[in-house]
Length: 498
Ligand code: NAD
Image (cartoon, rainbow, N blue to C red; front, side, top):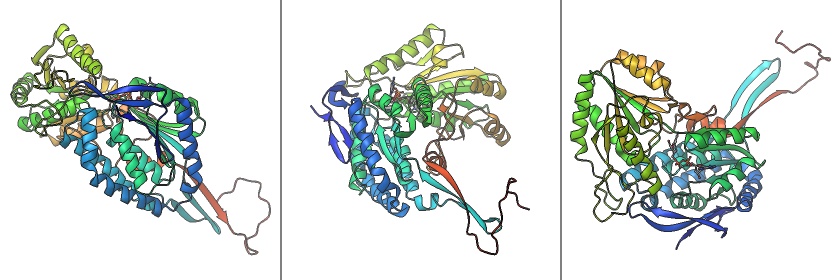
């Protein structure tokens, strides 16, 4: 059986002490094993990164960017192989895997602009004959810890920008679908990156804790669930590291009475059930304003959901695939059970989907739940499955109050034809990423991505302009070249512009 290893100092190695099964979630079979890095193996990766740093730091940004140009070409050339690996281990259908890869590639394209992004700031004559400038220097060794649901895109949010800014990287991908991420890192190596600049360690808590406690790691980027994000942020910052930790979500869509209902239904079906709802930006709650809007929404959703196709990634005609593990499948079914037990109406029930030929797969069909209330467990917690819940309210203010009261604040959206209402909503809602008739408002690579409240711990968002600031540290230099004409005596008061 294949044993997925680590990329350390340009070579794929295995540790050989502990390993864990990697499942094909469509068949339910343990198709591979992933090696779980020990503390010693992670320390080797950190040492390799540290050794590569002086040379990489002094490599001109233009040359660093050229590696990214070649990397982009290789990602495009090998897109089918990457999507096949994502399909085998995550279960994502090829068209969706290609979408996540393309969004990842756009971060590589942004990283290709490193010489421009790192130009810094310059002021001439801040005082007589005195110039001052700020430059943005790399931090050193930085680490990334990523979730299972985007094995290509989320790692690509992190390491291209970190590396092009002059850092060396240690990535700890999800142990549940590690192969696509390792393959992508090998393509970066093939693009001409010097050994040790990019390292991958597969593993679990032992690997993560080693990264969090090793003094040589200067910064940590994390994406995953909120309890782990909180732990990562607390531990990394307590150890003196810079940290950004992106967590879970509960994304609401307000459906106003004046919305184009056909458009809202189409957008909601894709955004709630695409990728089996295993997206941190998935729309999982529809807040319908008024019973007329709610009734229209529920009946049209019910009709649209008869056309949903759930199945294996082998059939590109499917809309979405299985959940990641059997345990996660049971958890999602448990949330649907709890909503039913607490009084909600299960309008479309996906708990027992029939997927011919894949009876052992971890499938849940699209599920629609009406008459959900804010007290229900299924509303308060993140389900992370193909489940759309409908809450009925009387006004937009009530809908906004509900969203603001939720602990998560990743994404949200409003469906309306009223520009004034949309503007009020985007201006006031306490959520980091807002869509107006756009269901998945994932910022493009030249903006930055991040939620509010307990969806993000830290200050700077992921990728885009914030990544330049996160992966560099500002140094400000003030310079004067004294000459006989400007030479002054000792000055004991705070220097000011006189
Ligand atoms: P997860 O939190 O279980 O795992 C994320 C990473 O943390 C993995 O690499 C894992 O190995 C590691 N990890 C898990 N438990 C740990 C522990 N006890 N100590 C140290 N490390 C640990 O998340 P997941 O299930 O892989 O991904 C799904 C979650 O990620 C969802 O909550 C989703 O909303 C969130 N997510 C958020 C964003 C975002 O941008 N905000 C994007 C994608 C996914």
